[in-house]
Image (cartoon, rainbow, N blue to C red):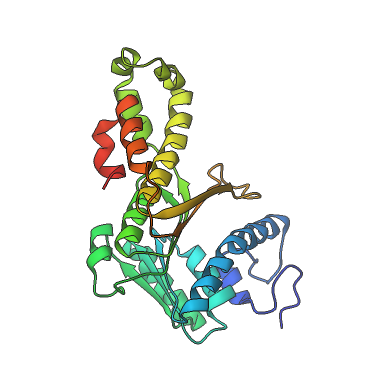
Length: 273
């Protein structure tokens, strides 16, 4: 049993070292203690969703899209999946080197029910290496449009839950900026993004608003909250979507109207489908 303060008894010390939450000699410094607190905080939001799924069917499937080094997937496996005999985590990542490194670590830790797939979004949607349905889709700090890719994957797989921590949302801001002069003649709301810093901030917030409406238009109930304590990143917005089946009636209309009034209609295919 682990006796290091703040480490749960069932946690793998070896994994925490690999993730640099523990030092090589197994110690916690102030920085790593903060990282561990952040991990627990995120797990606190995801664990009830996982329990809800296995309450109705035991063979839980989770896909971590834009997985990177699969930090989140490994933590979820260690804290939740490891103690159970069923359930599988799929890490989806386009960078082959990161996929191979994750495979090696999973083998080293004997995390047998983890798969790491070097696939694009389109490939992951149709790949026979993934089940037809996925229960939970996560995307942690998936940069720019990678969060939108995760949403598209989740909708195709009819995920029961979608958990997103978006990051580096530049696309909407770039379109706002490109059409700024034209927008001045269309709406006084363009003052909201007249200055570059406001363009960036408003573009980031608007991106997540559009994502929420997209999910609601496909029958998801959406909750947006803050990842308190996620000090190492300014991107600490957490979006949790629960599949309800019945779409919010005016979500698609609101999407159409926002894109039209803010002169963003060229992004229609990304947010309306």
